[in-house]
Image 1 (cartoon, rainbow over the protein chains, first blue to last red):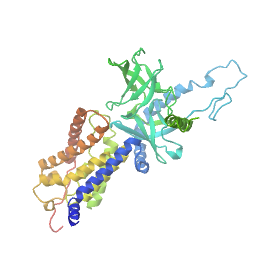
Image 2: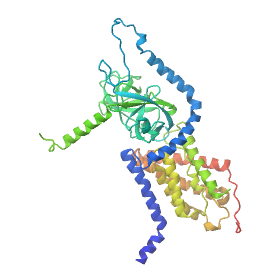
Image 3: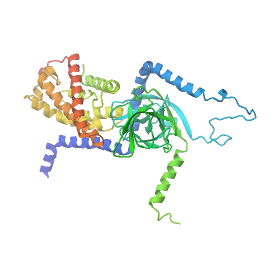
Length: 292
Length: 177
């Protein structure tokens, strides 16, 4: 017994070292599996405070470019206003506002909110963006995020009461369903961790005669993003001789090195769709219980 | 200045410099991430107990991790570095740490060559372990090797520049103090 105590005392520092390593690695690996971390919600309140201080200084240098982008976006929207068009039939007044559905039966499926970027990086292989909106402002996990010029930025992965963390497209574990605007064929967008200006798009069939400059938009199958929003343009076409699919290099619409104002999009029927998917999975995987 | 106060200010400065300047500068190359925050651990006094050093490593690493959203990554590397630091100091200096004339490791206290070897060895361990943990989920072996070397190179450059720009004025330690 005495020898055991002597042994423990002799290697006490080493045991503490092993224990702390275990704690650190546990943080790291549980995080990678669930995209959540222990205590990260509380910690992001603290880092958010520092980041918002930093942001007030940063804004001063970036507002000019940001204004230009916003103006461009406004310009494209103002052209869609009903007042630009002459109605031949004056008997009907078209009104569309933010109530759940209008008299023509349009249901609102997506709602948009604005937010400001507190902190973002492009240097790492796992890049995140921190926003100044959190669960107090109605932000939930898996909402989509678009930049102020309309390009896809990423997806919310974690929220604290006042801040939220977004996994940007520049994250090596990121997978997004997108499609080519002209051909409607969908593929998977990922990042190889090398150049923050370019993403990789795979599994677009070679039967599509793609050209450089083709537009890539968000796909129909995502429950986080509305379909048909800009993601990027084709910058380089790499024919892969071993398969029937292209490998494409995509230039992103959003400038990740200069993110300031972003829009968070909420799928209002997210819970409905999610629950349906879960229930279907359960039904298929365990058919005995549900046999009629 | 009080040793504790000095180190708290240093800690804040290094973390903020790393988070808001080195992590935000435009992308240099996919293999190069400039790191300097761990110089805080290298500058801690000789007399700090080894247990304390380990916990300082944990706190430093986790603080940076919460800013970069990678909990545990830098913490693991910092703890390894904090564990190895006393061994490296013992090998490089024939003396017992308590007989040092200066309080902290610095080019003046150890001499330029032993100090740079001390920094280089621990930097290699830090970046090697950090990149290894990243590499587990992503990348090829060649990428891993080059990334360790490139990141170590740029970190050494940053540390030497820091040492030349901010020579620490340290009191000669006497028996009476």
